[in-house]
Image (cartoon, rainbow, N blue to C red; front, side, top):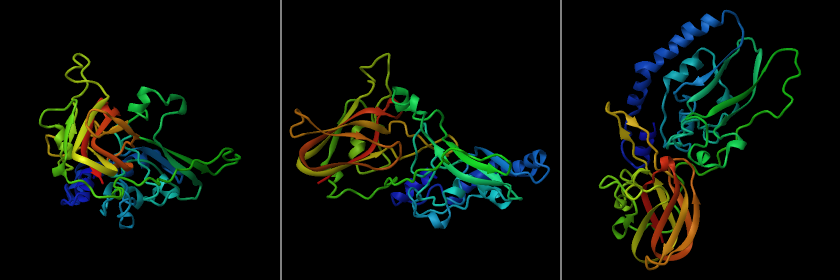
Length: 358
């Protein structure tokens, strides 16, 4: 899905096709779902008791990807009739998170990947499902949890891995009929996602053409990760640093990494847009493989008139998501831009495009 969304956003054909994507579920996952519903659930539940089932389903929500939400953030106008999760709806199961938070645009509920970073498409693939034929149970609230406990935040490990797993948690308050007093604390709630999403509108100004830009970097993979790929106008190529090498840091230095853009002459800049690595690799079987290693998270943007003397223009922090991240410059004059990446996913730095606006 991430690959298909990226292709669609950049005006390329939907690839893999929706039929091919659905085919992945048809080959294996749908049969697993039928086994759960036809064998496992009846084995444990032999009466009209309410049922709660949860876990990492590795499957997308058919409700989230209906035509109603085709224009939601990260959906790129696509609709996908996911068959795996629909199996559960067809036999009376409700999705607790979507039941409480019906707007998939405002509450995408991203649960994957809290370790590798959230891709272009909002992947909600972890669920709490419930079924209750006798109205003995009521879901009061539901939210996702994609951050470490407060006492575990702030250190280096938290910067690299802000959650303790590659999947986020789903938490729900469920009231079951009984004689008890019910909850005596606030009901869990999800925060709406007001952020601009994976593809915010371009910043004000005119983008400087790639033909007028050149770039150098202090570390890069020869050919495949050359710095010039960050200013070539092609979002499917990218600059990529070497991975840190503790044995020989002179060859593969640890962060911070820098990449410097020469704009050819002094410009009055309104903003600069950074696009993290967007392309996906293909596995040996030809399947798309998500790899967000190198996505910048924190750094400093510097400017210079002569490439010798530098001034700090902005401290920058970016969400762990594949999508443009803009830094407003509001009339700064410079010929050179230098991004210093202090922290990037996996200890590396990868940038698909750097686009200054004047």
